[in-house]
Image (cartoon, rainbow, N blue to C red; front, side, top):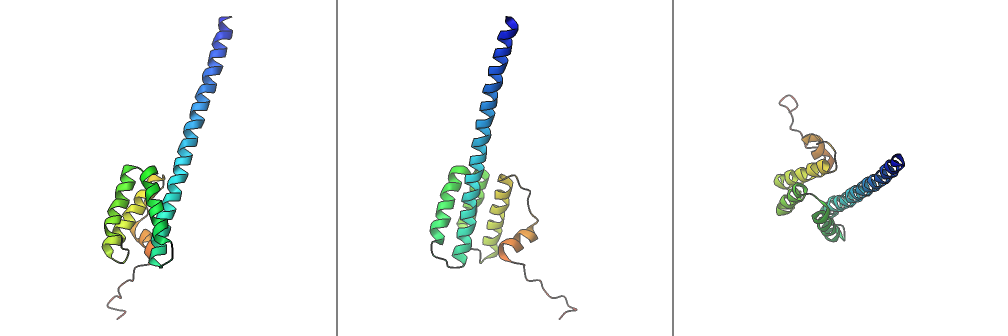
Length: 135
């Protein structure tokens, strides 16, 4: 009889633990998806603004609002720093956006990109100076 009780309690405990872990994993997956969508809208809004596309500011603002809800403090802080500059036409603005994107990558569990690759992906390859032999 006591073996039956132990078996039933173990089964119920296993079901409860499984349900808890499933719910936790679903919440994490949903949160990550919402954060990814917000980041897509932020970067897309910046790109659209640079190309003078209609609706760019609304897309950007929507993404930033959702970032405030779903992003961690470090990620929100890095995009806040970018927002202080909010200009990809200056080196300061490009550095701030690149750092925010690096922080976004880390928040999503990705490794940091090397600075040159990230710059090329976001803004195009930097123009390299001609060596004295090429002049």
